[in-house]
Length: 368
Image 1 (tube, helix red, strand yellow):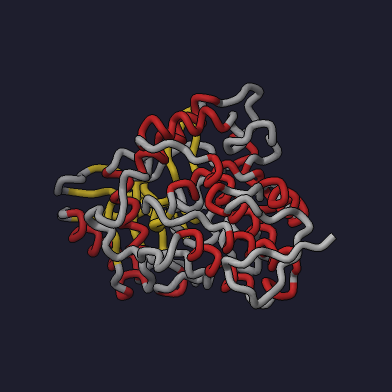
Image 2 (tube, rainbow, N blue to C red):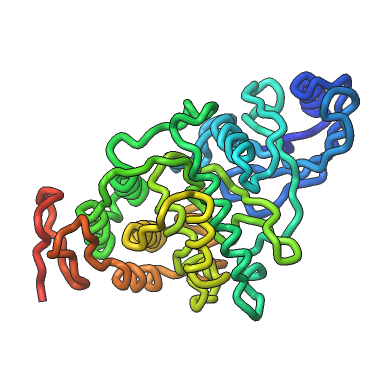
């Protein structure tokens, strides 16, 4: 994609923004591309709005969908910019520290791509910088738990979220099926991946609460300034799922950026993060379910080779920056896959070999 805002497109954007904000006139200053996005094109823009309820100068971000609509990554989990804007609006309305949504556009005649504009937030987002504090950041971990609890108050019945898909079977099984699609024939050729996917399928927790999840809630996807949270970013994978999925992803070893003594995002212990979550969600954390989702996410990280355009939560530069490697993920999977209450007493043990073409409720064959 060439320059999104140029001499030809700027007047169209300014005219559209004037109508969208109820202004008499809007001028847009393009301040360049922002880093950190693997899926979306992020431009820093300043809006000067004359007239209307939002009159004044606003530092904003324009998030565009490359390719004119469909997610360029090829990942089915990434949602459209219209859906992402609806999620952002629901989260912001629920009191979550999401950037304030300003306006969304699905008319390709404006910029040639779907996009929306949100208010810009200040802070540090690089994970290796966020976790470098000498002392555990217990307050920040607890606040991130509180924020997640507020987000999980939203669900399929929340106004404005009608266009988000609902899992067909259960969030866990949908996740396993998606992983198989993403991994392709690698899921059949790699014995570790095949065994892991089978384990995830057999031990999937039963369907329970279905809530609005961020689905990439981790260190590196929020901003911090002076030790405090300023914004939660990167909502392109949001969707309805098991609330424990977000907690497991946040605690995954791969997103601690080397601070493995601080299991909650490299910030502090899990107890602080969990306490904040329970405070606002009204829901008790299920450590077994969290472990399942942590295992599921690590399995995807370990299996995906990260081709160009791959989202950061399944491969690519963000994973490398977190100090991730495939062997690390495999080791974590083995350590986390203790039998769950819903799996019965005969859980999978490390070293077990999955035998193909057996029903999902069959016991695994074990070999020495």
